[in-house]
Length: 191
Ligand SMILES: [Zn+2]
Image 1 (cartoon, rainbow, N blue to C red):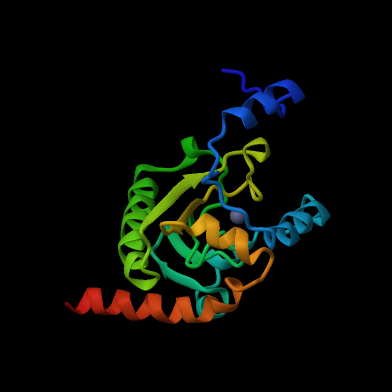
Image 2 (cartoon, protein in one colour):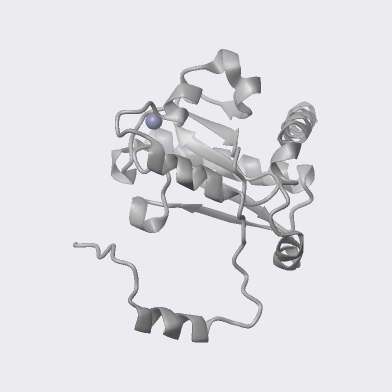
């Protein structure tokens, strides 16, 4: 099946805007523009940060890798949409879901399940957005290495985010979230 990756034209974009509810539930994270700009500066052969993290268990604390198995790992996103935003990825550098084995998919699914359970306690999340961006046209910053986003949400969080504007309050708490995540995970394991 052929996929149309073109942006909507002016006419359809305006129709979409009209169809949007008054209180848009989308998140606004202006600090991510730094990350998005940096992607455009990267040469095509630059190494993949997910591959680097997957191959460097000795640097897990430094890289904010939360947990890992033989085939996959979970890591805090350095450019989060919300507090506790993490990424779950296979160790292998594959950009296509069809290239993942059943073992990898099972492991990735369990990591998504467990991370939601733990994050609910770590950041008192009321809900989550969980998803994939496949290829550039869908917003993937790293299309060559498939990864799931797990984004905690709270009632009314978009109003709060809009109010604080571009204040970088989220990335400053990565170390604290990392520490609390391990504490909750260890408590869950020992209980
Ligand atoms: Zn990779």
